[in-house]
Image (tube, rainbow, N blue to C red):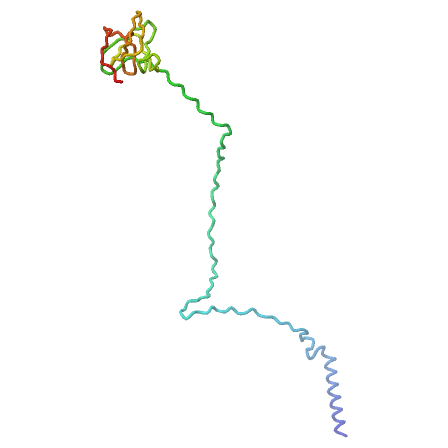
Length: 196
């Protein structure tokens, strides 16, 4: 019985001591300092070193050096000239050029029989392409011009200044002229016949 009373007193003294300590000290066992919630922070994974191949060359090696991008050179602005717009007006059709008028034949330069043009004062002698009055005109000879007769031919009959008629034509350089308007000193042919 005495042992039971002794344990009861011992327990009562311990409880009194604990009550006094709790009264004197606000938090003797640091209960309020304990965290009420558990916060878990995860550290970032440590960088792994690239694995090296047996030959010593790294297969997954990454270079952190920045790559230089090609700099774009400024392009010069080109001034665009306005294209010439075609004119809406239709091009005029070229007019046919007039045929040049036959120029006077002054004299023949080829060697032959010399003759002189004798027509009325102020008139000219017509040179024809063929010994016919309807042939194309090749030119004109002034009165008194000296010509060289290259050959002769028979053609249309022509009436001269004095009323004489003749069908004899003289071939000169550039065409034919009636013999009745050429002074040769004779009414006969002075040169052989012209080739046909």
